[in-house]
Image (cartoon, rainbow, N blue to C red; front, side, top):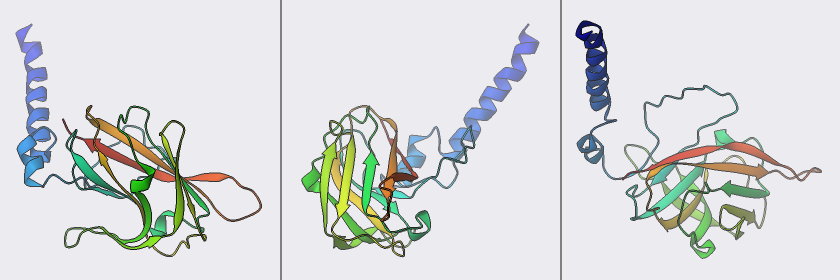
Length: 192
């Protein structure tokens, strides 16, 4: 019986070593990269669903109960039409309060390794929190053209419970049919 158990132990040890090398199981590796949240370089999804589109984001601090500045970015390649209304759905288990006064829509420069993501110009818009604080509705004064990167930016205290949170972007384009379409999702991890 021990001989049949041994290969499983080797597989478990190899998986732990592999996860540590990738930074999945080591907090020191995560701290070496900084305490900011950006999409990972290596990401695996069990179900490769063509209906899911991953969007770029930047979070200044991903530790639970700490204040973080969230940049939910929509690049020019993420949308094909102008935006008349933008809705961001917030997961029901993202237990924190977002103040609509602290939310803004802006043209942004998308950061990377050499520069930081930041707002370049605020876009005049009316911002409302609906569905008991679980949806941000943004109504720009004029339709936002699709040729520039934009971001929804807000400061918030990260929730007490860590985990992964999927925010979804829905946009309504100018036209005859007032219907919102899915643009993509930001999957953000708040660490424990």
